[in-house]
Length: 459
Image 1 (tube, rainbow, N blue to C red):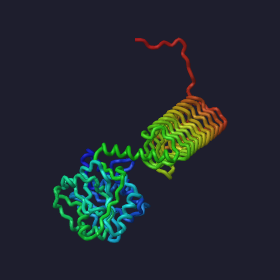
Image 2 (cartoon, rainbow, N blue to C red):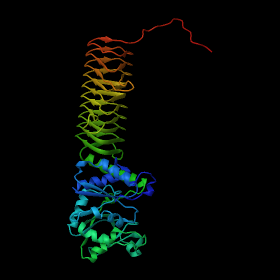
Image 3 (spheres, rainbow, N blue to C red):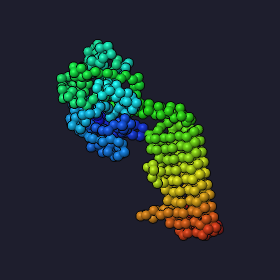
Image 4 (spheres, helix red, strand yellow):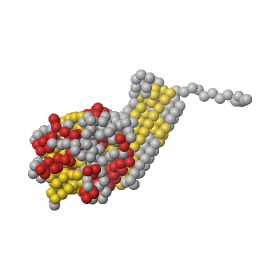
């Protein structure tokens, strides 16, 4: 269910599209459905329907393994009314798992247990005990048998004292659900069609109603405000941090660690504070990540050191734009690696160096204040401070090739397309527009002139 407006978010963006750990709230829910091997996902939209549907269509891969269907709830007349909109596309022979698009962190294992409790013939409810159950539907039991769910606004004082609440998640055979939905009415305080009313229909029809109770409140926590979103973000990141530390990763402070995608780590990886990992990132054995780094879509090989304040922004994994950092490389501080940066073993990229769509062979060094764009750099090249590749002519990008063992002096401009021959040297301050031969010293700058006894202008 993803039709709500989310007024308390105070945002133009539909609530279910707000991000948690780099993914939309709703995308978390759909990904969990994929983990259940669902054959069909039905998304019930309403507020911002087109925007929500477009976002899910783009971000749900064709390899997800399920068909994705969209239905509209307009107007929004309650949870029962929402699920009624899905009736035309629900298959009769399946188990329907009802999930909420703003409850992102329910675990697949929990839902598997709920489906097992349903067993293809029962109505199974996911429940939890809350010290303060205000606002939640209460679970009424007779012994171990569930008799009803009473919505908070309709509950008596005695019913409001019940601590076991309905999470909003259920598993029910479609063959039972369809006739029950047809019997719903809106004779209640809110004038809405409650999905929870199907419990009394199940009881009346002799269908067992069972509750699968969990203890983990994060799994059923919803997002209704920026405050709740931030709380859930932190809860998610804390769990991520604990998982990585259990695998042997050394985190300087687990409270200052953010994974907004997929991170894999080898042995003896250490990560300092305030680091953010986005997209798909892999860290090899003995990699060290300094403080305040942002790393996206990159593969960093064993023994590499990423010094503080480095920004690595690779393109999509599996493409030429993903960033690769070779074994034993030293990057930063304050370095920037952009899409297509491919760095070999023992490469050094120092402070305030930017690399874009360039390949650096093993042992190449650009230690400070430089730009390498659209370049192929050979082994053991030393690239001086303040030097740049002038790769753009205003319409097209051109490539610079620097062959092995070239030494480029400080403050040079290499106007592409250009090739510097192996073993050559470029004198500091040179602007080169032509290829250079191997082993040569190339200098291209104006002759120095000194004017004796020159007087500065005076007022």
